[in-house]
Image (cartoon, rainbow, N blue to C red; front, side):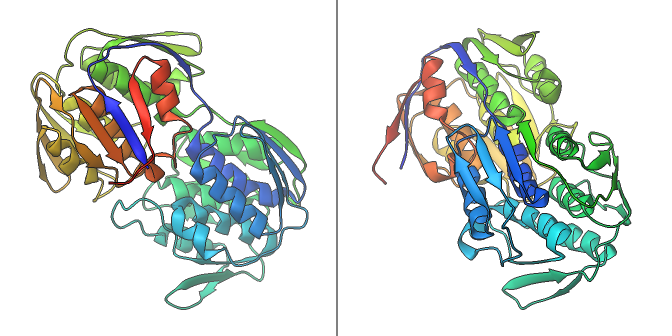
Amino acid sequence: MGYRVIGGRRLCGEVVIGGCKNAVLPILAATVLTGGKSVIHNCPDILDTHTSIEILRHLGCKVEYDGTSIIVDSAAAAARALPAGPVGKMRSSIIFAGALLSRFGSFETAEPGGCRLGLRPIDLHLQAFRRMGVNFDGDSQTICGKAAELTGAKINLAFPSVGATQNVILAATLARGRTIISNAAREPEIVDLQGFLQAAGAEIAGAGTSTIVIDGVEKLQNVEYKIMPDRIVAGTYLAAGAIAGGHIRLKNVKAADIMPIIDSLEDMGINLHTEGASVVLRAKNRPNPLPILATGPHPAFPTDMQPQFTALLAIAAGHSIVIENLFEARDAHISELVRMGADIKSEGHRFYINGVERLNGAKVAAKDLRGGAALILAGLAAKGETEIHGAEYIKRGYTAIDKDLKALNAEISVLKTTP
């Protein structure tokens, strides 16, 4: 399955940004902690959401989902080994480890899967768990952790890992005593996880800064919560407006969460302004190049927007350098963009881009989530027809990218056949 895009149409119209993939997944894991009912609104209808629901049901939770809101009753949950199928599909499955340790004192899982972005070790997660009293065993296929009593600890992360920060927060929520996370990730999704846990009665503060303090509580309460809008989906659609040209409005956007994206677009000569919870983009000419675009932990430019901006810079009026600082193999989109006529040279973590006036339609393959979105954007700027195969990757993070882009006047349709 894939998408067919006919390039050359300027975008216009408006789209409402839905709930955030990278926020809903740890919050779904956090529902295990309550031992009761959690009602979560604004949940994106993406493959990763359904994978998390599959894991919750495997653990014994009752789950109802209407495509927008999810109701989880975790009263009957148990510390069962995480199922290999869902774990192999989604790296965020490892976040269930912290929740299971916090509530039951043990977890068992296979190595998590997800997009192939190079080495993505979970060492920081396991090191933090050890400091909280967890012992590990298992074989080459499984990771088993158990704590006689999970206790708070001072944890200084060697790198501000989002996943490790979330896992420690979850583990610490019901642990005995105080946990202090230093060099914590500062991403907005960490703030959203804190908001959910606070609404459930957790004692946690500091999310959005480099120091987070959690005082363990005995139990949580039933909770109702609304997921934040997806800043990467918003950024992707802004990049679509910039690459195709036109005048678009995105509604339900937290501009503060996407300032690195907005700043980079403005540096490229794209006109943007905010109106309350909306962002309006106007683009008339080819974008300017960026001397250097470097990814990094928030508040730096997000790695999840690197492929989309690489596609955008491929048609910029000059030379750009993109530096990928977080994943050593986030480059699968480069060869596919070159197939479409992009002039990009890859040297390790650096991509040297000589912008061309126009790309050409081609048959290309998505090999990961954000790289797939980048190829769709490239199709918007290409002459003729582009076929993007590998929709299963794209659907992991975008509820209905084809429908949203159609609403913005793009010519895009779903391909039912495989190449």
